Image 1: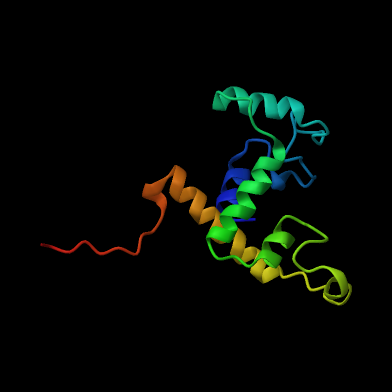
Image 2 (image 1 turned 45 degrees about the horizontal axis):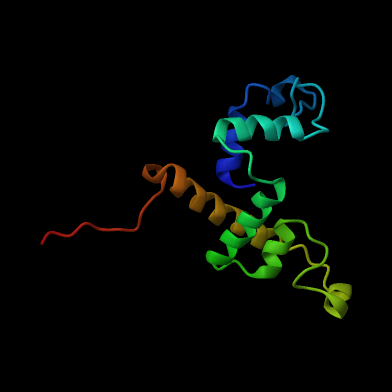
Length: 132
């Protein structure tokens, strides 16, 4: 996960690793895993002011955004946990590499990109202001 995702999860009041038991991060009650996403989607749609989206739109947005950032398609496929995709056919039979470092880097880059959209002041810029 990206640093931004970890920060959000650590900020949830339900996430208490010090309790010594597995609390559910994605839960409506805190002690039972989410099994139906329709309720969550309804709440997100209400907060956004639109219901015109699907869960897979998030996956499509992420993989398209990663392509924009120069993340290779086979790494984006692994981030989405696709078992087929760019590496297919005979190559998929032989290539079982998980690309963990590359996936970590891709998610970090995607996290920084999204954070720059929602909190531009939080993203370190490589810009020097010059006098006229």
